Image 1: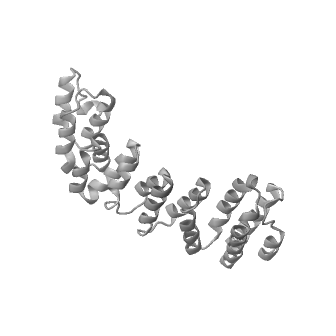
Image 2: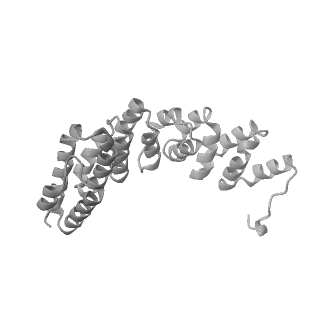
Image 3: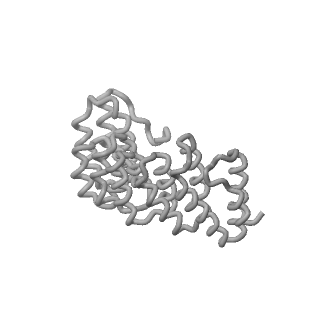
Length: 245
């Protein structure tokens, strides 16, 4: 079966059995793998589905998102990115998820604003999460991410990057997100961040919920002196280097 034949057998209204649809997509994927020019047929199918989306029954909405999610990887990188950018402004979360997945693989610096816009419009935290995970300078958007996510792990990822990019800015933001800063400093293993880590520690001796995280960060920063003081305050012994510390 050729690529045009695949398109000829594909029901744009998604009323055919999902197994038939899956078979056709798999066959088209094989054809694209054999000849890059077949990606043009995949693009045509994507465009056809989008053009006919208003005719698809509401019960088939998940089907069209799933189908598009399987077809988009068959497109050229440029077409994938163009499709992803449109997805970020879609009202359905499933469609935005397709766009975020594509941008994770084809991220460019100019996508940072698009991701922030996606979050501001839909409050979709996945857009912020992607910003913390891609290899990009997030210094200009770090404050927005920290302010709009309550996940301390994601906040720590922000600080881990920001400390390496702009330590002074990270220190300014540490006051509002102290534990996330400590965790980020440990991730970055930045000795210059140690004074702020110690300042935060001294104000949180009774914060048992995050004490283990502070201890971990001090260990990552090689701050054995402060670790010893902390151990003494709780009457516990630090392991010696011979014990595997």
